[in-house]
Image 1 (tube, rainbow, N blue to C red):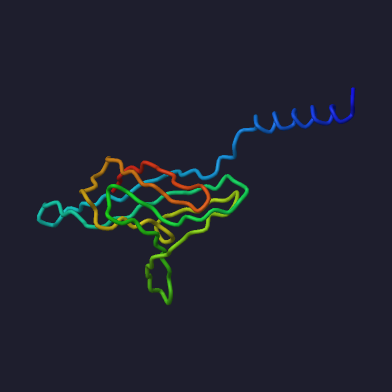
Image 2: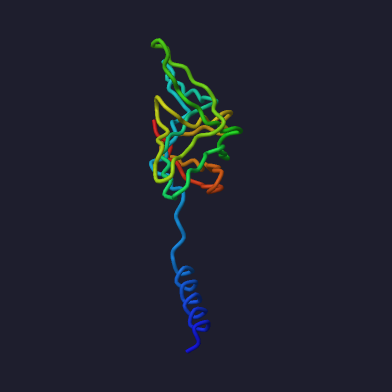
Length: 151
């Protein structure tokens, strides 16, 4: 067999095998939940809140760093990424424009660190309901997750 022909066949076989390799699963989201937006008053009334928070864990299963650049939810007019910091025993929060998710790593958004702030809620979020949140990443694009509403 001609060496050139043999090389072409070998390359075609390699390309076929490469096409059979499953795609790399980039971002996965786990343990997503949203704090309820209603509280009981001392008088027994239920008081709806305008804002609430969402917590979750983001895993980056890819070999490249990704960046969370924003989020959306039909439950809120605005969703922002926030960070809690402590300085001289005083806790403060601030909005951040992006959150790096390292390659092969994970970032937890939970109380006392990063979290999502759902601002200007469009409805009361009560215990046991679900909220859809779409996370927007620089590389992975849009990843939608359902988060349970908990107290």
